[in-house]
Image (cartoon, rainbow over all chains, first blue to last red; front, side, top):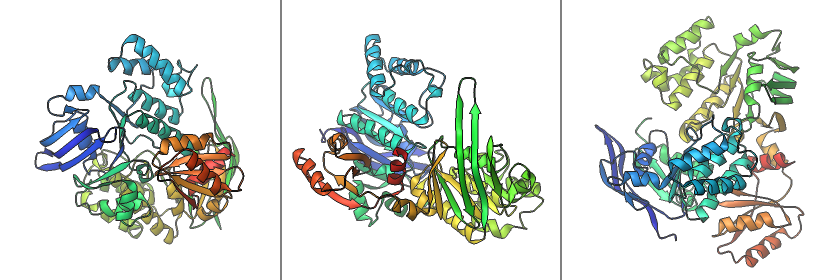
Length: 247
Length: 306
């Protein structure tokens, strides 16, 4: 399972006029892997992620996501990935059931399948009896768990998590990571960006972007060993401080 | 000498249907020239407490004073002497860096020049962009400008509500270094954060959750309060391992911690042997066990369960 590549990027470049936002990055992500994508503000993370999500066409290089080419098949990519971020996820003024139905509908699930998935999801999250609750009324931790479950409602090959878990208590945060582990066990690849280095330590492998390049890519354990650091924070600070480009 | 005194503060909010108890009788004191951290997740009551102490909100009951002034009776005195950086960026987006700073200096009857020493180290980092509108600054620069504006009248006490939320690791580190510089210059700092790892950067912390304080101590003291031995385990099959540890009747708690799972047993006898046995029975590969010191998150979770 671990040998099946779900994302491949080779010499990927994105320029905006004179400015090279993403500077020749190459990496592979495997099926079921939890892959951390780190970098300081302005390092090029968002631009790289937008290309992989089929939202931005690269200037040069090759990339495939879920087996589809980012230049030619970006609509197919969008159908086969999930996306969740802290800033944009659920509709606050819709109920839990309506949010599930809305997203499942957008991803093209059939009516019966939506019904099935809704029941399953409510059960998994222990939200039975709450389906008519407005999302606005849910505590932040529940919103995050629901948003993640909805992002994978169509069983995508990959789910992109853009800074998913700010601000919740440590137990709730771990419940969220338990959902991620569970999805990864089912073979869904998890691609996470985060500012918080302790979160990076949950990933199978981590890449660190500096000035548009990938300056390090390895398991958290190896990175800490190679950079002689006791935490990922230490690794990150050593690399990010070399950055010339300012935010 | 105590700079902030909080005694039994209660604050509730009523909406049509529900009653939210934001603060359920919170008490603590902050010493002069101390960096005191309020550490807790969203909804803990941190912002309500900041707003009460900066005289922007009135508590339902309890007493609080800042620099010897009572928050309700002497609110103008407090407003003159404290600096407040709210969680949401609240400078004028359509004014430049320089204009924002001048505005706040003028409001407090002072000038940038008068207290320049205090902000100099921070201000020189954003000075090259001084004519840029605040709305067009990056997160790290906004944060530095907001700190300058909160300092421009040389406050005795600085209130910082989640100053590092959403800021990258490099800017966060720089920010904490700035706070330590300010402390040396005689400023008392009350700072809140949802990030447990920042606790170690404070002199003392209060761990807060759902309107109640779980513990107040130095970061080392909080860790010393964690009495039970803590094990860190690892194997190739992490998810399966997590589930079997959680299901084990001898285990009190098991939480994933990055590459490891942290395990606490109910009784403290033969715990290493029990872990080894679990590993053998489950046929885990590359199984590792290590006795470790707890971190603030371990302590927070243990306190949450009590």
